[in-house]
Image (tube, rainbow, N blue to C red; front, side, top):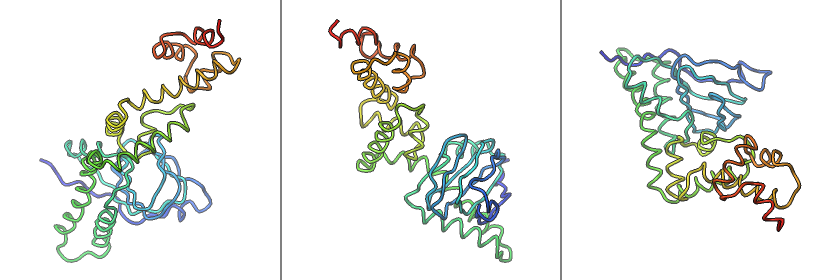
Length: 264
């Protein structure tokens, strides 16, 4: 029989009160679902080595077993739960770790209503309290659908893709992944991948490789750098991988391209 999730911890949190002389909270592994509504523009939150810029009105849902810590300042309203409902596990696991909801006031109102009821309980309020928590739960569960509806907003979609392309253009020489780019625009990687492909006609990975190949072409034609230096300077993990991608994209090897550009 399915049971209602059990609330373990709840309240208002200000990291500076605990870490008064620190710049970051301690690294820890989560043991439950951690629902948080951010109440203050702050530092950066890290969950499983992914970074999220803290913004007031944003929400965090950390899942059991994740590694997390946060650069200060960080203030939030929080509710931590455990559940043995496999369907709910699946629903919550599909919610992104960080999300900026367009209806942030709904989340804040729901959190504050629940916490107020916990702090100043009325007689026979268990049913009301359960309803207030389920309202919060439903808001989180609806997030993946809300993210999918971004596809129905052309202007917002264009802004998202421009932001993602700008991120790739600035960081293509680094070790960035689809997860990194999707996190930067606050979308799940599946939705982001499909949105990027739908609007640009290529995948984020293809665009990233094109940026790296174009940079390699420039360095091959304009410098005397070694092939390995060119590979690393262009964001490739090795000279071998650069050669593989280069030949696949241009139908010639880096050496053949360099000779061609030199007129040899």
